[in-house]
Length: 371
Image (cartoon, rainbow, N blue to C red; front, side, top):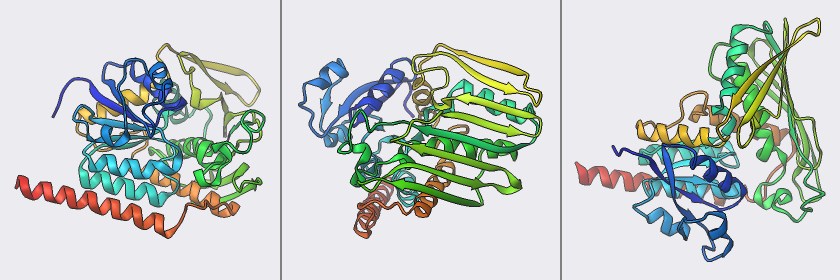
């Protein structure tokens, strides 16, 4: 097993890639050594990722200098590049959502299993101390028995980018459910798990609805998740509607409120606030002061898992079963809402399965040679 900082490459330059690179730069466990792009000659990459070699994605996957890759492409490309990275022996951290469906997440993990590499889904808030503090407060019973969760993640991109942007492209799996609905769903499943004394819980039923816009994606959507034991979660998301984006957890002895829980104490550190409101209205605030940058936590967690020889995240990160459960809820939400993507074809599924088969055959060949 290698030692020292994990050598990372990024597939897919863009805003989220720069956020990850900034976070990675503020850890001691990993370092960025390469950037893979479809058009590596674009001059802006040198300014956005100073000092980092830019190359084709194929060259990055073939580079012996790269141990692990962070995938920051549009949603439909997550699965293929994760599978090909695994085939190349690279560890993989994939930006949420893992794929465009639970099926895709399953085949991605099958590729990681066959190649014996780490693979995880990047929900940056899961590793932040504020999330740990929230989890502990619920477990301690500060609001009694948890009965209802309400959470939203909604913004209005229509005024800024227009409907020809990828946010509204059905062929790019646009809309709110996959892009931001995954956050309140993942938090609701985390809270339900803590309430049941486990790391996460899957709902026994999902009822969803959405308003599909002219481009065929969900512009605003809501769902009700019913968990064993009676806990109910109401989640909503939007790309054409600004919502209050407050997490509210109601219990038999009060409630908890957290604004923008996925940002925690801020992208570049700061002070997070968890408000605990008693039945009589008395409010207590738990402050979580954290100077470290938001995306440094997931980068550090992935690097530590890789160096420890693990193949998936430990809680509170999303392990494989946690990711599959989250994707299954998103699938059910989309089915309820009548939302399908034009790229969800049998041909696409067959292609991904073929790619996974090649990973398995390559791994078996290596095993035979080493034996």
